[in-house]
Image 1 (cartoon, helix red, strand yellow):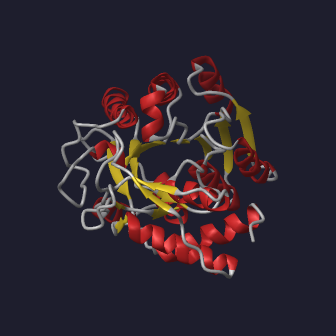
Image 2 (cartoon, rainbow, N blue to C red):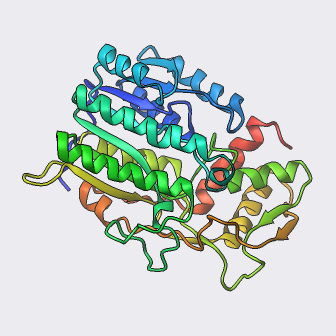
Length: 343
């Protein structure tokens, strides 16, 4: 637990900088006096206005350079590495979403596989101090052993999205082995918070409330065997990443590549989560809120439970996510009602 603090003299290259995690990480680095170079293709997978609003806040800082572009463009990625000579890379650009990958597989291969390959190639030709990249709890598939540990067998993904994230881990390991690139893979567990992704359940449920629509709950109405999710608040995610930035793997004689879970390690039943969201919205609005609910079967690619063991993370950086679901959701609903002017 002897980790080095953030080094503000380094150049940080953040892909997916206008995304949810990318925005918050860039903001934290800029507030710490760091130079941040961000790239994002600003695709329309979800509300583009949200991405531009995040970006607008970052661009008010003179230490932030933004490039609108796609990491699947190898020449662009290479030219940016040559121009900025970044020291630390955080690859957060990816096509997200489990269900969307069933309908639109091409974009997942383009962004998550080819794009990440281009980042690895750039790190190979323009050596860096540390490459951190987003993996996902989805790599655990339908794993029934809980909590999920980084050493668990993860060769049975149940969605293309999960397959692309597993491929990222394999590719990073290979490049670390061949070219000694210090790399850390981060398996995120259901990240949520203000300015989050509208395709996530908590955000979508809230949208449907104000559209006077029912919410769909994919657990067959089975409250005893409800879905469990390890919800992780955005500030905890950013704190974990920040602490890892200046602490690359690199033990003598080992491949300098490690995988870390970043999760709350306190899974909640989906129905408890929904009840908490109702309570927080009631607090934000000053009136009682209750969703209209429709129960449906679990969707292909969904898993029954996500539950992180965070022991490795704690050992590496002396940190464990700790924000409670009530505290995190209250911050989200307060932001949502102000941002969308809901009363």
